[in-house]
Amino acid sequence: MAIARVNILGNPNIGVYALSTDTHALVPPGLPKRVKREVERTLGVKIAEATILQTTLLGILLAGNTSAMIVPYLASDKDVEVIQSSLGVKVSRLETNLTALGNIILANDHGAVVHPKLRESTMKSIESILGVRVVSGRVAGSGLVGSSAVATNKGALVSSRATEEELDWLANALGVPTSIGTVNRGVAFVRSGLIANSNGAIAGQETTGPELDRIEDALELI
Image (cartoon, rainbow, N blue to C red; front, side):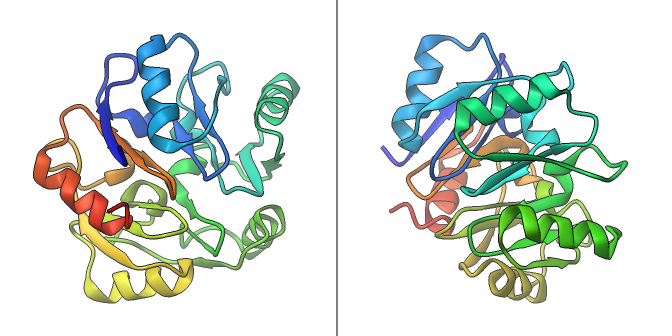
């Protein structure tokens, strides 16, 4: 199955707590075995358990691609060591006072887009860490680009409020087709209720059948 629905910690806002690339997925500790098996089977990757800044908000605080994971500058040495050893990829702190990196960075293996107020030096750091070209801008009029879309190496699902110009810009920046959609019965901040990679997607339990169809089309999972 290319797509499934689950809740994480009893919540359909699963993108707040977890994230995935083509090679790994991070989830908070304590998930039922059934949920972990579903995530692994659907995404086709092994999952690792971690916390960050003593919270389970992995999807909000982390961003990355198959090359590296970026963590807030406040992350402890233990946070970095656990994630790095679990995933087997480079984990780097980002020197910025902003900590909700998952909300302001949207990346795949082809490119990345970031909040328009990030400094040029910070963008250069992200480029160096992830090994991709980084551009800044807005999606659906918001600088929270990481919250407004989910991108894999095959496609991107973007907020239903995005304009055609924003969709074209994202497609060029990320090197994949883009399409609008929602999750969890109409939520436009699609990252909140979706984790995905090139193999499959996991949506929050409240996501409807038509929304799942849009996700499958956008991420080219059919």
